[in-house]
Image (cartoon, one colour):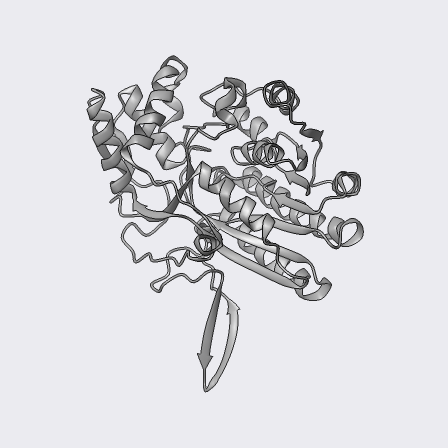
Length: 382
């Protein structure tokens, strides 16, 4: 396939690019470095050094022999998006190109507007670039399980059958996002569903849970190829933050009661899911939706797991509850369906003690790079 990856500099985008290139596909990546800029502005840089996209592509070529073509530009600019899509002439477009931080989107008006404008403009521009330059291409869009919120019913895979007053219909599953970032993803889904119906686009929307991990077959070839590992309160997921806190000797900060439950998956499984979605494209005028996770944990369960493995390494890990800076339910029902990708062939990597231990070892090696004042919450939902 000719594959265009938007947001190719990201935690998921860069490993995805290497994975597709290693599988023999013709890969182009595009990015505007928005995450890098925000990380610098908010003192939230990644734990491990991450060369530029051009430098990483050159290193990947050196160690693997595979090419990755790089385009740097603002995809929220329609002319840039049109140019990138026209030149790449892709069969498959993988869309990661959005500001991915919920806390950043809740920081204030400037950050909220930046998130809203970037995320919706990029998606809208991509839709029209496909209509005009790649109408037969298949878009694989990264959504988020955060779109659904925490409803008091089972979460179906994107769609739900409703019976009302003796009649039935199939609808998008109700969304109730908990941050502006997650709300932009809800709006993405509605935009895509509209243009799929009207223009016959082919789209797969992957509702992904939080991802953890540093290791992939390609990233392990050279330290310069490692994914962006953030541990701060802006970009760091709860798993990353807890791992770094354990190594730094800081009590694991459980927000509130710690009963917040979400669906998680290993970085290696994200790569599997995206590849499976690309190999099994939606049909013309079809919006496929899959819930992309492999297991669910509460915050307390993750803290217990990191504490247990950390203590086996002599880290003397403590756990501490702090006031929740977010507005969210801390105890709730959570049962998402996630059978579609398994049925397509996903072979899950679970969060075993060995997996946690390996991540801790990687962080221990970089312990001198940890900046402690980045870890505690600096943003409150208001």
